[in-house]
Length: 212
Length: 96
Image 1 (spheres, rainbow over the protein chains, first blue to last red):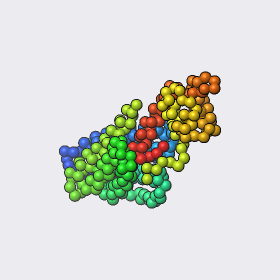
Image 2 (cartoon, rainbow over the protein chains, first blue to last red):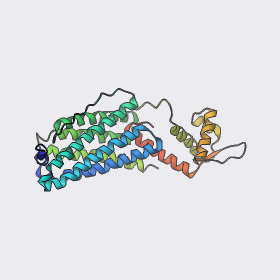
Image 3 (cartoon, chains in turn brown, green):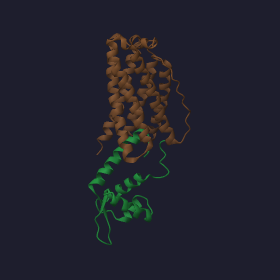
Image 4 (cartoon, rainbow over the protein chains, first blue to last red):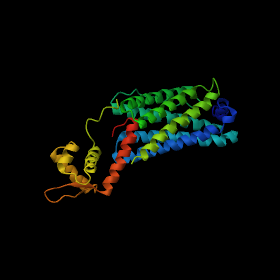
């Protein structure tokens, strides 16, 4: 618990004072977009029973739940210092959710390409903000982004480009999430980049659902 | 990687391929058009046409020896949804 008490304090150290609270708002918006994509993937899975769509659905559910929990819990935690351990837990839920979600997406890509997947072992480390875990997520999303890039080079379609841009921005955001201990502004840049990444995915979703 | 089409078509993909041909022929899709358009053998064509009729996705519009097919409202809706899902999956690089 002593470690947990550092939760919101550490977050405040990472974020510039003026940005505190906005990060939660952005995470809640990100989660809504993630749930939108997961819903559409589930709808697709129900129609065509293709497992890769179920993996896509489940990975975005995990992303959405993690972002929503972390986003919602941070707000009261900032007001009531006693909730700091809860903030640490919400961060842990989000980061593990992201690792599992992107690993699942990677699995879906590799399953489709019938490649081998390197076993991913998750060590359950009870930690607050953790650059190591952020680095794992960065590499996972970067790999997913590279798969999306290859898909775009083949398809040359705008929707594929939006998915590639989305994952690229999400990968960049996790790279920025590694850097706040060096410079606080990276925390802001990371959240803005993450929001832009989800916005790119939302744009693709809107385009697809509007198809006649 | 994702440029590879699946080696076999799922049942739903075959349904969609047939429905596309029927849609293209605008309510006058003859079995031979569907057979070539959806790349099916005769036996499989008969099987799938029966299944699609059973599911209410197509209806027979021709007379006796000049069979032809058209999409039902349910068929139009299915094809529309399939296209959206297919586009969505392909945006991520998944083939369905």
